[in-house]
Image 1 (tube, rainbow, N blue to C red):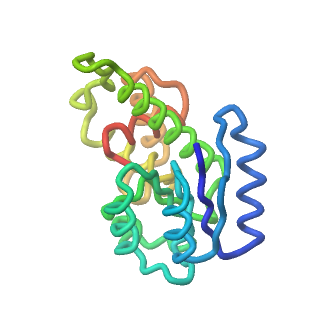
Image 2 (cartoon, rainbow, N blue to C red):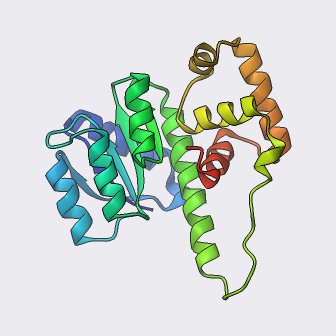
Length: 208
């Protein structure tokens, strides 16, 4: 994946670059451009092909969810992962509704970022292989969503958004133990083996 990293704090940007260089070499992920403002994002997207935009929501010249909607309209195939210190549920919902693929908290576990990017990479590879099929060839479909209960779909969506077990338990008014049980059921039903595969499945269903 060709990645545009948009973050106005140099230390945070360097930390993300170090994390990605250590965690994702097998994915051939490459940061091809960096910027610290909204104008820079628009300029760089117009200059070169970008697969994934990893961006802070609180940068100069960024107007929140409406800005995400603008990007989505101009670059419909671009994957957008938002990183922010704002943990407000309304902000999260607005960003995801506007077209972001994932909403991550800066103070969250770094493994969530890694798992999210793995899932998006798998989704991108799936899309490219499907696009390369001969006309009329059937496309592989994810396991039927109707096999999941409403609660399992809620858990799957929250996993793809980077929510922790405790956060999911709080938002759904259930215990962390129940959350873990639902997660185990999801992995069994979908025949997946880790968080990255759950995220990939959720993105393919549009639950992210």
